[in-house]
Length: 187
Image (tube, rainbow, N blue to C red):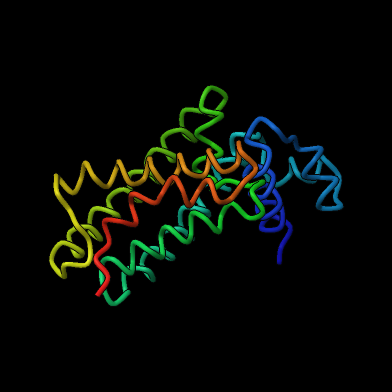
């Protein structure tokens, strides 16, 4: 793995655990075993670095969602998304990158905020397509407008992460998504 990718890996973990404003290039240098000047060689500013982390995260997230979309039903795809959001909590000390960055909205560059909004919109669009599939294959109860419901589901998943982390209890995530699970028709 090259130094740039190693820095992005380390930075993603730091952001997911501490937030965007909770780490510095000095932290990256210390954890990667390189000098701070070397971090600046790869990323001129923290905004450039944050953007690189989020762009890579978004690419990986889209690839994962595409894999989930190949599930046998819309309900199965949604279950995989719910499991992904729970898994991203790790031991309860991490958040998905989008949730972690949203908490630091006031310190994000406009470009970083725009990419965050695009990443969330792409996820909501994917959820909408899963809801449409689930309505068609009867694996998900969809009562309203799938686009609106998709945003509500995304908010529920992201909010469930915040509740679980704040409580220091992963079961809070399960409680928060319980109503979502009741919408799945398992046969």
